[in-house]
Structure formats: structure tokens, C-alpha cells
Length: 437
Image 1 (cartoon, helix red, strand yellow):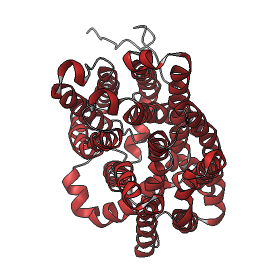
Image 2 (cartoon, rainbow, N blue to C red):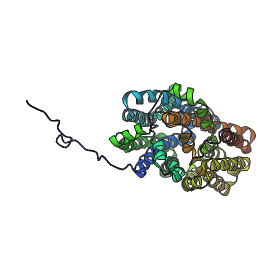
Image 3 (tube, one colour):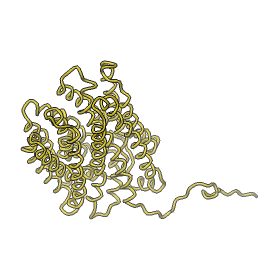
Image 4 (cartoon, rainbow, N blue to C red):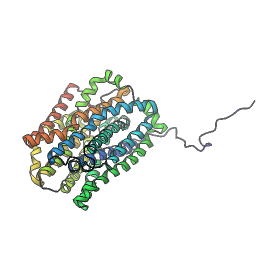
């Protein structure tokens, strides 16, 4: 009687996995930071171009202010499209796995960003150019809905109990890193090129770079999420996509409160990144290069503040930190926007002070989202909550702030920021357990 034996993975020349391989939080953190940096780089490249490029090339038939408002309206489309992208990619994740979902989403994000670099201008194609810009912006937001990989939640779950705040801030480091790279790249292109060359082709280069960065981020994340060890860990931690409707029906209150809890930091996000650039570019005679470099400097302070937020959250509690920062942002909204009319000194105070507050609050916003859900709904619930928070808190912030400022003065732009701070305080009061772990 003959017997057959199954060849081992070594005999077949296939890679093997160590059965007792320890999952390192540091290894997860690297993938998270690279992934988030790529996403925010795409975000800031488009945001900067919305101020410096798109009003001139796509809306030359109106004055610069109106053109910038139109540009900000298209900017908001990605935030509207993002929740729909999450619905689609969650279904894709359940059917084909996280690796397939991430590959399609990141190539879609990088591809739609790079496609903007090939767009004809209004002078060449008329209104068709504007429609194409809007379509690719929607595609960016739709694809961004599929980049949620659960690694941030996994990172928090595998962190020591007394260091949850520290590890929760790791994903947020991608925002200052992305802004630093995007602002520095635009500043360099503006500095070395004549204005005509920059508007003709120089502005397109950062959009090409976005595709390359997304490819690097894709492999960095796939290296983690498709391995046997991490697939097992995802499953054992219940970090799997579940029905969106089931999550909303069971955790609807948590989704809603979780969406409003980080509004102060999300509103602040655009008040110190996109809006001030538009105000300085439209209403002062300063060169955009100088203010872009101020943004780079302020983002460094924001980076340090994000790091400090982890220590503070672990020592005093995440809810206490977020509540304190919301109060600080409310105070900031009452006087700081007027500093943008105060020359270089005023701009530096506004940007550095704003980024410090942003870093302290934004550094714990992902922890708020993740920790509010039971494990079986954490993956899907966190994605939905993040989408809604960005939509309500940040999507229309540049448009609202610029409209308010031009009609009622800079102090009025603080009203939008104040509303975000009040929403955060209300959400934290309604759910005392939110973000307290």
C-alpha cells in the first residue's frame, strides 16, 4: 500500500513563517506612518494647488477671490465622496481581502492624483477642464475611503495598557510629515522657476511625485497586512470588516458621537494649513514661497506637539487632554485669526501657536475613534467615524473660513473654529467614556 506525503514549504522553495514570531508595535508603526504620510501628501498637494494654481488655470473668468472659493468648493468634493468609498471598499475587503482592497485603493488614489497633472486648463478646453478637475477630486476622495487598513487600531490594541496614548498618536504623525514634504516641494518649484513656467508645467510635478509615494506606501503596508502572522492577529482581534448597516444599527450612537468628538482638531486642521495660505496669497503682497516655508517651520512644531500628546494622554487621560485642547482652540478662535494681518511676526505666532494646539489635539483624534467601539465593530466603525469627522469638521473649513473672513473680517473665521471646539466639548460630555482609555 503506497503512501504519499505532502511536500513541505521548504521543499517547494516557498517562504516559511516562524510560528512564534513576535509582533512588534514598532513594525506596525512604520507601516502606519508611511501610509498616512502618503495620504496626507496627496491631500496637501491638492490643497496648495487649490490656492496657488487652480484659480488662475481653471477659473480665469472670475476674480482671484471668487476663483479660490470655486476651487475650495471642488476641494470639498473629496470629503463628500470618501464615505461612499468606504462603503464600496468595505465590501471589497470582505469579498477579496485587505491586500486587494489596499492595492486598488492606493493605486486609485495615486492614479487620480497623478491624472490631475495631465489636465488641460480652462483656456484649452473650457468648462470641460473644470469638470475633469471635479471628477478626479471625487476619485481621490472615493479612493481614500479604501485606504483604511485597521493598522492604527491594531497598533493601539497591541500597545501596553499604560502607553495607549503614545501609540495612538503614531498614525497622526503622517499629517505634519505630509505637509512638510508638500510645502517644501511647492516652495522649491516656485523659487527656482519663473512664474510662467511654474503655472505651465512646474505645478504638475508634485502630482507626479504623489503616485510614486503611494506605490512605496502600498508595499510598506502590504508587507504587514498580508503576512500570516498579521492576518491571524487581525482575526483574533476581530479587526475584520463587517456590515456597514449592521455597524450603524448597533453602534450608531457611538459613530455619531465619535464623529463630533474630534471636530475641534479637524476644524483647526484646515484653519492653520489651507485657509491662512489663501488669505496671505489673496490679501497681502507677500511671496507664497515665504509663507510655505513658515508652514514647514510650524509643521515641525506640530510634529513635536503630536509626540507630546501621547505622553500627556497617558499621564492625564485622553478625554482630559481633548477637552483641554478644545477649550484652548475656543480661546484661540477668539483672537488668533487677526494675527494673519500682523505681518511676519503675526503670521509666525498664529501658525506656530495653531500648530501646537493642533498637534496636541489631533495627536489623539484617531485614538478617540478607535477606542469607542467594541472589537467586532472597531474596524468598520472607526472608518465610518473618521469619514464623517473629516466631512463635518474639515471638508468645508477653507470655504467657510474664507467666505466669513471676506464678508465680516478675519475674526469671523474664528466662528467656524469655535463651533468645532463646542462640538468636541459637547460630544465628550455626552459620552464620558469616549477616549478615556
